[in-house]
Image 1 (tube, one colour):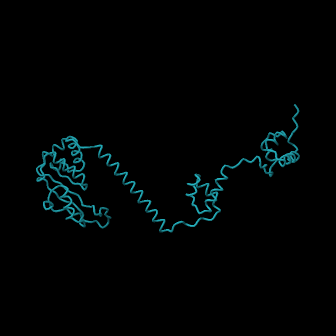
Image 2 (cartoon, one colour):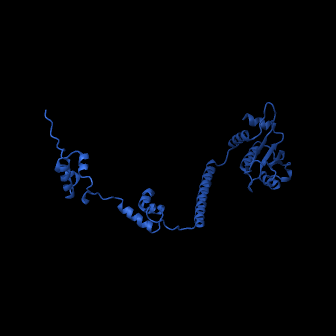
Length: 273
């Protein structure tokens, strides 16, 4: 079998023809069909260095956006503002306008900090409102507790927070301590349900030595509905200079200790439950 002559052997002749056709305004496909060259690599080599005719160039969809972005940049807009205006990415905007001078800052450092703080304040206010609304809906969904629900809630609360009897240390009495006023209120309601008279309760504050003990006792006394003069001597916590206290706000009132005298039977009921 004789080999077919190499139709692409005369490269320079083909290149001269291809360049002529290119300069006459033909597209690559037209040149391919005219010269019968179906090797794309060869076809591109033949017209290398010759720009395509204008009519073959597809319009660039982002040309208008680029021009508009440059116009807005020259007006002093930031990348963020241009992005909002045009709806394109900041990376594209950066490529389009990075050769243009940066706009003068619209605000001083103090004004920027003030605007930022105002924005944070609005955000926190909105978060606080959302938080309180969630709590309100949850509170309303519970409604009033039945005696059984209150009893079970009190048992669970005491088992988590109250003093428990141990085989090596018999403590069959109700002895409870907590710093949360809502928890104390629930615990006192539970004691009322159990029939424990308030005059059999003993109260004592446990608080840091640098806090306002008298004010804390008045607060807890008002909450419990008793006279602060009936409180036992407060337990003062010594300050460790190697630690940093977090509970230093005006709302810090220490913990309230509630001890029920003659409560061994109630304690056994609680433990059994």
